[in-house]
Amino acid sequence: MNKILIIIKREFLTRIKKKSFILLTVLMPFIMAALVAVPLWLASIKDSDQQRVAVVDSTGKYLSALEDTKNYHFFTAPALLPEFRSDTSDVLAVVSITADLAQHPKAITIYSREEVSQELLSYVQSCINEQVRKDKLAASGIRDLDRIIEDVQAELSVSTVKWNEKGEETSSHTGIAIAAGFLFTFLIYMFVMAYGGMVMQSVTEEKTNRIVELMVSSVKPFQLMMGKIVGIALVGFVQLTIWGVMLAVILGVVGSVFGADAAMAAAGAQPAVPGMGADASAVAVGEMSESAEIVQALANLPYLELGIMFVLMFIGGYLLYASFFAAVGASVNEPEDTSQFMMPMIFIMIFALYAAMYSVENTNGPLAFWASLFPLTAPIVMMVRIPFGVPLWQEALSVLLLFGTALFFVWFGGKIYRVGILMYGKKPTLKEMLKWVRYK
Image: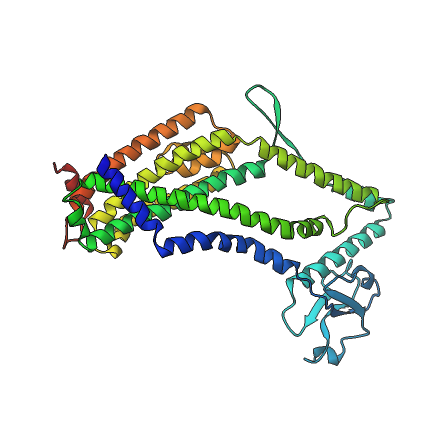
């Protein structure tokens, strides 16, 4: 046991002292925060120049529907003038309407010297479609038809309520449950792939450099393998903890800088003032109500259950895959030889990720049920199901199968590791590796 602790200490201290580890640990939170802050900052930069768009409307009905925006100024033009085609023209585009669009829906065209931007195209289509709809309703002759149709087409907002174990009603939010499940799922997926691969890389490098021949003269191969697995796992825990703390601080600062402006933009860029219309008040109340529901749904997530299952699935999944990666690293002579053994496990991990995505649609369906019990996919799929509620017996069975399989992989990988670590000059086959397991 003391020898394993020495190896764990060596692996841990060696890696956290590397410049690459320090730089990655410090810089990664800033990079991740920049992915959020930079687009938000760029979106906050407004273009003060309005681009001119000419409207050639032979019917005289649609110019009023195209109201100016912060980016576009619409003005009427008598015809498609030759100067509009010139590179020196200050007119961005020309909207040409040659007939009543209620009768001739294809009688509208946008001309431009460059590709028409999606923003301009969408805005023109939206405004003109709304005007055409009003014209068709007015032509029907039915009184208040416009109001009736708007009332019929009004969308309902369905709230969700979940009963707890005592039968009490608690607020729930499907989107919050999905986000929470996928957060833990991606953490496990990224950790297993990144640090499991680090185990394999470490073993392969030591075997290639012949350092391992000196090490196994003092410790047993199994002790060496377990020391590497646990030591690198601790490196990962430390790195993830530092990232979590730094991201919380950085995003808190970003939120304090951009939060007010973003909130104002989302709310329509105007604070509440006396005399605000009833419709605007209703919208504001609706937004506050939805925000309160989200906060309540966040508070009602099963954090204790999520935390316990995350730790168990995290440890079990890492042990399972890391022991396999260590065995592969010990078996090959060159790093490029690992691909033939790695591809099946990578395919399984990708399948697990897709199974988790599709399981969201039916968290109690056959795919979600069996994939959350199968040990190779359980660490990823089970975490998606937990926010939606999973019976205790299924969680216990999943953990039992996962750790049973992980221990088997540790034993199996140790058998291959002890022989493969000293094998040189020949590419191993699966058949040969199975023979190594039977060696005493």
